[in-house]
Image (cartoon, rainbow, N blue to C red; front, side):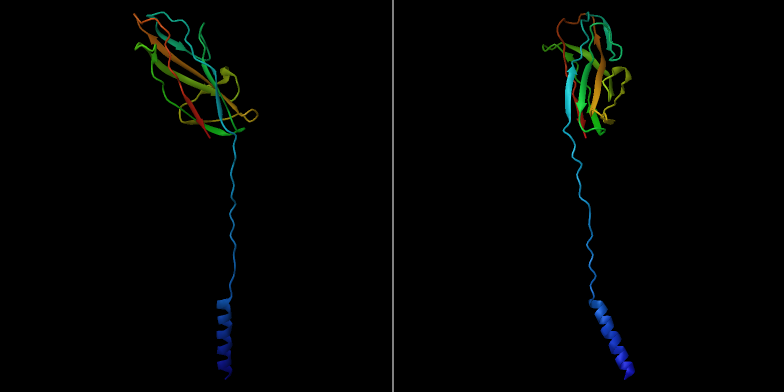
Length: 167
């Protein structure tokens, strides 16, 4: 009888354990890093200046401009000390709008998080740069070369260069 009561007590005890529920409440943290909207401002358009027909290759180096040249420049502004991805592609040749073209090669895009072109270094497409920790700025300067052949039709030749920047 003691044995039966012991077995009954064990069964009831185990039954009680099987009905005992433990409760857990897992938690996760939900967050969002809200960043400032990016702005890109064109500071100056790029110009090779007056170039004579037949001159051949003319290079514009933003860190060593020749007389009459202006480097194309942009300033990006966004969240302080935040990396951004820069992408761009080579623009089409320069055109006078009536079918005449001048061969163009973008030789370098350089940048620095301060407005000092002398300290700028090359920025390849599809790379990251970090916006300045104080101003949120990053500056870009564009250089390149054109090839002006003999008999080139005189005129104002242009093309566009598009810089894409994203967080």
